[in-house]
Length: 130
Image 1 (cartoon, rainbow, N blue to C red):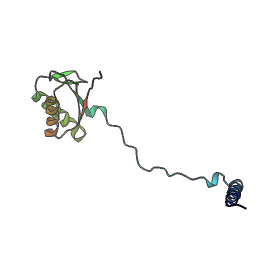
Image 2 (cartoon, one colour):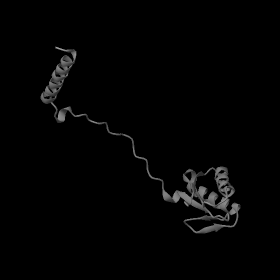
Image 3 (cartoon, rainbow, N blue to C red):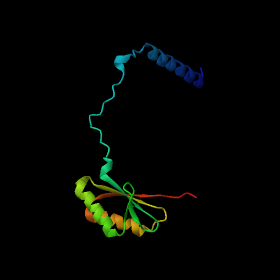
Image 4 (cartoon, helix red, strand yellow):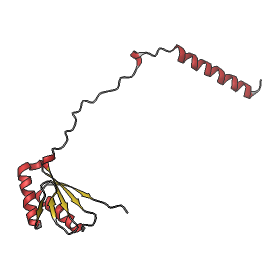
């Protein structure tokens, strides 16, 4: 017998044995793998009233998007954020939303005020696609 024929017969025998073991193996509900379950508590969604949304127009005007309040100056905005922090404490958050054509200096000014007051912040930028 040639070497190629021996190898072919060997593969045939191995496959027959493999299928035989698969057929006679005992697979039932008891042998299924039980996946572990998480014991951690789910993280609660943030309260929406803890967050104020400060919008910035392209002209540099600051306003609260929910309350429709405009601020004449950065000091007025600082006082508004300070009142928000006094009301909600460590849970107070500010979300800064700048227009795509707003100068970065206006956005940085609001972020600086938040840093000075110790209020958590995030920055959103509206993009325009052409």
